[in-house]
Image (tube, rainbow, N blue to C red; front, side, top):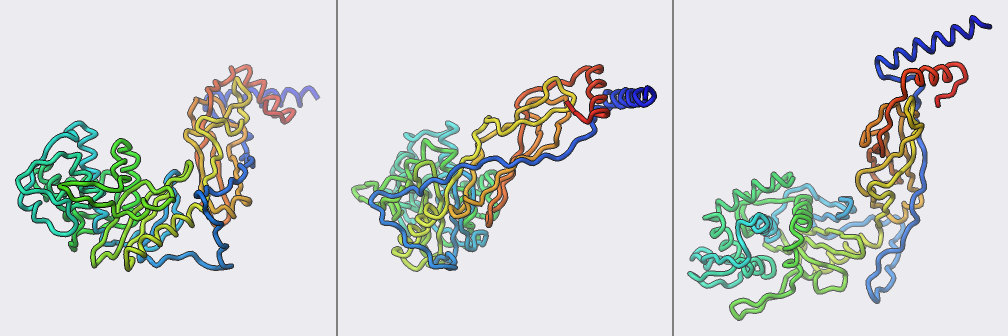
Length: 414
C-alpha cells in the first residue's frame, strides 16, 4: 500500500516539475454550453400601417430590378441580393464618391463650407441634371454640395472637382484612390458626375459599402442627403429620392438614371435602432423605382429583426481555470454581439459557448479563451472570440504539485 502511495506522489512531483518547466497542462477537454437567447420583438411599424398580407407558401422573394441588394447596416448582414457583385453603370449614384472626397477635405480642415470656388466654362456647359451655375461666378462649397446632392447637378460636381483638385481628371484620381482605401472591391470612376462612360462602373455591394462609409464617417454632413429641396439662382428643385417623401423612415442617399443604367437608387431607412440600406438598379421608370425600393424596405423590416445577445464587456460565462490562483475566470466579448435573422428563425436560434475546460494558467486579461457561436436554420453561423475578463496568475510550485497529485490520485482538478 505504501509503495503505491509513494509511486503516485513521485509521479505527481515529476509531472508538476514538468508543468513548471514547460507551462503546459494535462486533462483538458473541450467544453460546450448552450446559453439562453433573447425573446423576439414585434416588427417596427409605420404609423397607420395596415398589416402586411402573408407571403404565398413557398413563394421566393424577388425584384424587378436587374441589380439589388438589401443590407442590415448595424450587422452588415445581407438580407437579399440579386447580381450584387456584378458591374453596373452607377449613373448619378457615383456622385456619392464625389461627395466623399469633399467631405474628407472638410473633415481634415483643408477647406470650409464658406470657401468659394470659381465656375469654369466647362462646368457651365455641363449637360444632364444641373444646378444652373453662372459662368465666371464664384460659389460657396456649402451651396455646391446641395447642388450636387439635392439637385444632382453635374455642373456643381465639376466646379467642386476643378476648384479642389485643379481639374476633373485629378479629382477622379482621388476618387479611385479613395475607393481602394475604403474597401470598394470592383468600382472604377471615369468622371465626377456619373455620366455614361465605358470606364465607369460600380457594384451594388460597393455602393452599399460607400453609403455606409458616408453615414458613419461623416455624420456632420449626412444631413444634406435628407434635404428635400434647394433653391438656387431662383430655381427651386426637389430631391429626386422618392423615399424621402414617404412615411417609412428614409433619411437619404442618392438616385441615378441614364439610358444604360435605367432608374436606380441607394436609400437608407431607419426605424428604431435599425438601419436598412436598399440598392436597386435597372428599373424601367421613376414609378417603378419608387414603388420597388419601398417594397424591398418594407419586406426587410417585416421579415427580419436584430437580436442583441450580449453587450460589449458583459460577462458571457465563467471558465474553469487549471493551476491558477483563481479557480474560474469570466469570459467577455469586445463589442456588442447583435445578429440579424428572419423572425421565423428566431425560435430555432442556438447560442453556445466553447472553450477548453479547464483553461490553463497563467491567463492575461484580454487573452482569447473561447468563442461564442450563434446558429439558426438558413442563416450564416456567427462566431466571435471570448476574452478573459481578468488576470489569473499561476499558483506556486507546491500548490501545483498538490493540485496535480489530487488530480492523479482522486481525479479532481481544483
